[in-house]
Image (cartoon, rainbow, N blue to C red; front, side, top):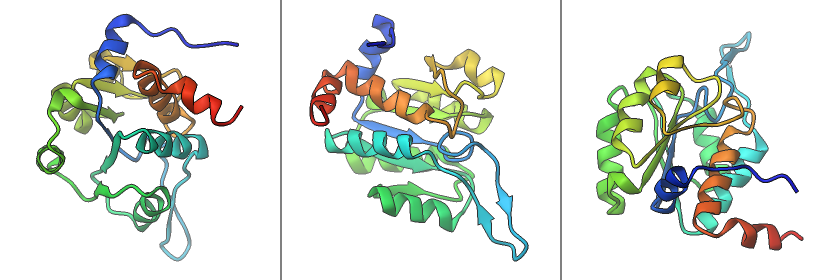
Length: 179
């Protein structure tokens, strides 16, 4: 069995996580927006990421979305995954972040924020664990606590959820549920 190797520093930060906040475009999707002939917007989401997010919630870790864009597709995906906390059209992502932490009584040190580009960097830096995806902007990768092996929209969020569950001794329990 191949298991990833995580540094003790990364696992230590991940053990404290009670809230995972994700950006959407470039993190939960591959960053492409497809506009149909009638103006409809299309995105793709990875099923593995969705399973990972549901697994986190099942183990008592809150999941939230903070994104700068507005999209019916994102609202639908959040509803499918039972993500209760999603903030769209957030030009000031810090205000949404602060509101969410206060609402959930969570300290920034207990937050993992996943982003891929410069507007995500302030949230990553104020969080206890700042993560970006393999194809995140180079400056964001340079300042992240961890860079996933996979690109955004291609299972990167699942890698993050597995790492958090592993750090909190819950991943083997999840695996046993299916084996």
